[in-house]
Image 1 (spheres, one colour):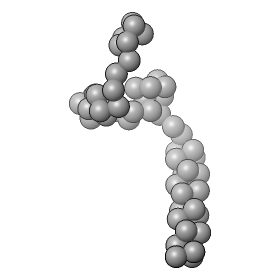
Image 2 (cartoon, helix red, strand yellow):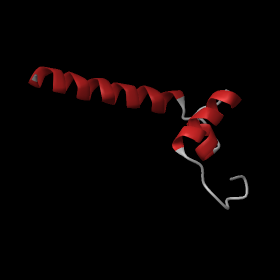
Image 3 (cartoon, rainbow, N blue to C red):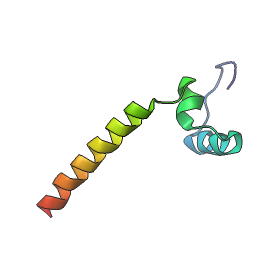
Length: 56
């Protein structure tokens, strides 16, 4: 995996992130998302959920 010769499963990626105490983003991209990106993503999800809730 380190040499790019093979990939890992999602399950292994999650397990590695837990063992190393880092996010999967960090393992995949080499950096953490900014707080602003996370905030915007959460606000977007909340908005979508609110829209879905109103339709129910």
